[in-house]
Image (tube, rainbow, N blue to C red; front, side):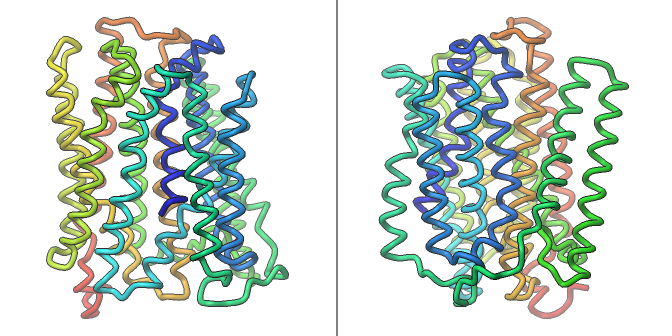
Length: 458
């Protein structure tokens, strides 16, 4: 939990420092957004190697190695004198955070009985979400008291404590109690390369469409489709040959798991995308200092943490699928209402709507993995956890990047107030609302765990 808090904090706290980083290196919003985008992309792709690392190195060695990598990224970013060094530091942090992400879900599904899994997910989620809840507030204060570099140093003490705890508490074995085997089948590096290039092309076509011609964007989109299609074909071939594919596509033949993966994609898009949009809106639209932005976002973060714990406890009495579609609907409504907020409107309205949206996210978080994976065999849980977390973080990466490009003022460092700026923010909020409503429709079709236990789900 401590290590995951460090990784999650790295993913969100930098948002409050983007204007300061852009000013230091003379970059526009669209360019400085790569600080977040590269982190999210690295975290999304590296997550897929977690099952392979656990079988090869075991829980403890994998965890400790990633904590050292995360700490190194934080130190390097704090000392950086060039923007390229910051990007490299974020790449290191993203790889470490991505590998760690699926491990908690594996532990919850294997170490706790079915009737304990909801509560365990809630307690874990409540603690972990405190990191992004407190991170922007502490980060904003550090930026004003010290410098933007201080936000990179925030992860160092968390990593140090996590490494110490790892040697005391985490077993050296791999999943299922197996002895780590360094001769385990080779990593599918070709699949990893195809997937990375495909996602990069997908993101690049968004930039080209925003800044250049539609024809160029269509060409890059075609390249993305070709790369991702080749990746899927290559994964099926690896599976037929008895290898270990990065993503076991056969998992998606399970209807509830496929629906849960789509909801996870929407959830990631909304969580990370809205965090970025709200931070940028308050700093560049409302002209609030970084420290005040963190304070304004703090109540919403605390509500998210508390609602995750509450939802986890409620899963013993309320079906997980009901929590999921209720949360998605609340998220859609809150984002849709933000469109009607004028730049001169009271700040309390924005805070209230952010609270409502975070409450919805809290209802979804602990129920999603349990609901989607309840019909998956125990031997496939590590692969299923990795794939569904990949869907969530892929949504987060695409969400932060696409919204960052949409809000980019053609290279301007700070948005100009006026109708054009308002239109950009309203478009972002409408996109978030529409996707959350699509997630609500998908969640309506998720079966309850009780239905699966009685064998009524086909």
